[in-house]
Length: 131
Image (cartoon, rainbow, N blue to C red):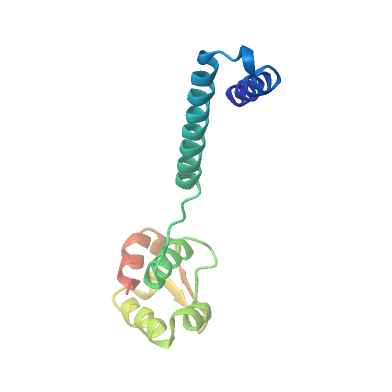
């Protein structure tokens, strides 16, 4: 902001007294303008880096949901999985659970919740449920 104000002052002074304009002021205004442009460009780059969004595929969203939901007391909402990723995905979950002892999970029509014992194997269960 200081450089911008300084450039404006020099430009204003030059417009009032063009006969008194010094060559260093021209250089100063040119350099300050270039510096201001450079700062603006770097600011745009930084804002782009800060506000960059990760684009997830549907499969990645499913994997994130499974990894996160299995660690909660509410578990994985199979009805939501059916609506968002299809009946085949719910069938896949049910089939993959056959690998584990029933004391690791509670499975209802709408929910899959890991038991305390099952939570010890949450990473393995989740990775087996991935597509």
